[in-house]
Length: 502
Ligand code: HEM
Image (cartoon, rainbow, N blue to C red):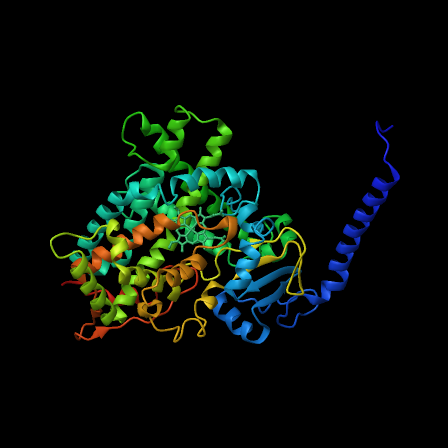
């Protein structure tokens, strides 16, 4: 028996409230079901599964948005996708309604079979994610990153010297330098060469990740029951891939952490670094559960910070080869502000608006994650009269937003002057490129520091020139990217011969 009695007015209010909630749910589900955002015509059962692109999806979605608008709905085998093509809608939903737009999709292949489920990039919006994020966010906050400036500057100077000595090694040297920096600040481990196992395993794990989160790569994500098939059955090769990738991501996250911990005592672990700081704050030993969170949190830092930064840095070299006048203008700014007696440092950034504009233009022209990383909405929602069902995967088409000719005239030309030196306009680009709401990239300020150091050091010391073929003719690269690969197409060929000192 209840220990208290409900008075008639309370009972009535509760009934009315309950009735309203039930009616609202029924109304949303039944009446608004037909008011999903517009999208390509769906076939029975499979929906748009056959139309969902796996290559350069952002360009296909961009075309579709011309017909269906800035809020589009796509259905693949019953899974709802909502594709956003305007910054306003992205902010209204992913920023302002972040309390319920901050989940991640659950990929059968990535989360369950290939072992990425513990990494906080893919974690559901839950306590585990919150704890991992807190560990990482404080170490890479805007106020903490200056402690890494000296490292970022030193490593980029070594980078520039190495590519001047051997221009053909540009792509591998950039990967190596970004790897050295990120692994050094995460684990205090200094990568010695591009063949270093800790670096190569991490790069492999990141490459696998980009395939895993591309919708349509694995059939088992579209038909989850496939995961119950016996492994000997033909067509179940995805199990073998999952086994290999699971080991790669496990080793990628655990080996450098174990190294960091084991070498803290011997002094080999270079400090400060993310893992050492947290282990030391805990008195040398973390409870097992916290240690696991740190391992996967740190692994996500490497995952988040490798390809994205590599892609942006390589885009810089590509843009300079194709736009010599931009390069010359930046060099004049460096000469005027920094002079020729010393190399520029990250602290000079506030006095170098044109270099800042080049960085914003790199992000605008070739966002490292053109479709960002998808969010998932946790409850039914209505926006602008359209029904957005609980569980829908929300994909902001950042590439489209940054190529809108109304906002960025002649969007395919590389033109840092389009910002008129206005930091607010540059910030708008960065706010889109680094993601949304509670999932916004925690490595943003750190990434910007590395990129600035690479750009300013290169331009202060070199002319970035196209390579020459065997007949002495310049090899000009195309402004094009391959999906899932952070290396601009043709860049390698174009730098085979040339990065001259100026
Ligand atoms: C040019 C460089 C970078 C770009 C363009 C970039 C972009 C992004 C984007 C778009 C997201 C998804 C945000 C969202 O879901 O709305 C993200 C998430 C993330 N980034 Fe970055 N990132 C960069 C560098 C870095 C660096 C250097 C680190 C590490 C220090 C890092 C760590 C992460 C992590 C851990 C997440 C997952 C956050 C979460 O799920 O809560 N990123 N990044």
